[in-house]
Length: 254
Image 1 (cartoon, rainbow, N blue to C red):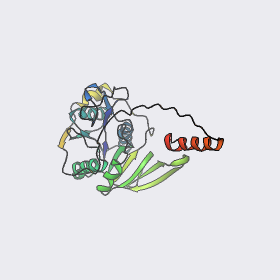
Image 2 (image 1 turned 180 degrees about the vertical axis):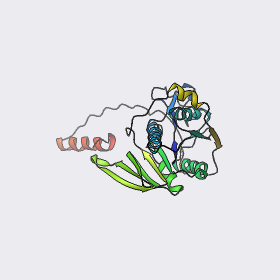
Image 3 (image 1 turned 45 degrees about the vertical axis):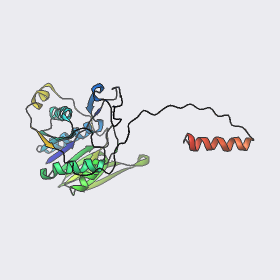
Image 4 (image 1 turned 180 degrees about the horizontal axis):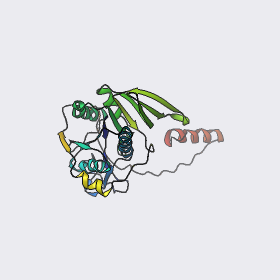
């Protein structure tokens, strides 16, 4: 079985975020970039599926600048067989549809049986690329997956729904599924794995930038904190009416 795992490099939660001069991103020189959390679970799930089958190939794929190769190498050190780096320059794409088309263009010829993605990225959090990519490549799709089983040329997935409900779905292969955090316990790279990752294939391809973005980031900024005091006067009924209005329209908590 040929499995692709999409991995994204995102700013670490402990990094100081300073807005870039063009106000389209953050200053990267102050950031400690790490692998997106839910993508780590997707990598582990792919490796476990391969191990259960006793054969197959796991390919780590990432879109981004040169620094993104560190994230691919991390997946290789855990056991992925090879990597694909789709090169992208600043300003980075932020439109899920455009990103999915970039992945589809790069991966179409690979003919993967299964594509795994994390549920969503820790920076933008759109949670759409995996489903869009699957649709573009003619694959079955599922999101919020918390368990997987391979049998008889199909994949059975358990999906997490609202209010504590779950759903088991049988999908024909090829399939693209988005993995929920907590589905497994991601492994740490071994010293042997880290050394071996340096020798594994990492193919570089150029991102197809011909597709026009349907949405883009116009400005990144830190919200201004505003303090305001209002003394509500009038009759009891008027005070209650005004208080409810503030809670609904200004504070938006009811």
